[in-house]
Amino acid sequence: MAKEDTLVIHEIYASIQGESTFAGLPCTFVRTTGCNLRCAWCDTPQAFYGGTRMPRPAVLERALALDTPLVELTGGEPLIQPGAIELLRELCDAGKTVLVETSGEADVSRVDPRVHKIMDLKAPGSRESGRNRWSNLDHITARDEIKFVLSDREDYEWMRAIIREKSLVSRTPNLLASAVFGALATKDLVAWVLEDKLAVRVQLQMHKVIWSPEATGV
Image (cartoon, rainbow, N blue to C red; front, side):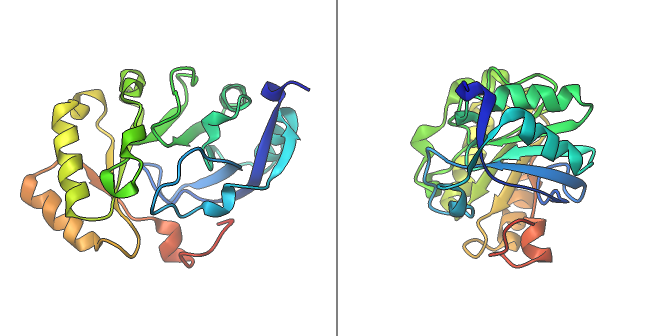
């Protein structure tokens, strides 16, 4: 079986969307195994290894069986798996609102235009900012979202500069800023955003508030 016809899956489950402009909505998560980055603050290292290789039709069937209008493909890094592009298209064809959460390093150019891309830009505190694929910005539209995860004031100032230098507000109105859980106080982030009148949406990771920060499969 060709690699495009399978995916290595860590878990498939239904919960609520914890982040993004879709936060709070019921959502099916398809979490793939494997990531080619090692961000300092990564909160899903359990998805780096293991998983089960599944035929793509079986992944689609399990995702649709959970019967939520919203489906997100996440990881790990889903776009390093050859089968991800076709799975995203099939989920769109099934009438779902489809999200893909991606690191900003993987190429997003082949993602179906119906998919809402939620793409990180890695700040220096991640220790992976040198891996940002800046050409991905050419494929970001007003339906997509750019996410910054910030660990300190330096990260915030980097985000502020990148928003200006890359004219991000003209690419999408959906600029997301969140604090690394346990590292940066969200109230400080809010104060900086208000002071600078920055056009970003400060967000929490709702699942870490509802459940515990260590909980998985939620």
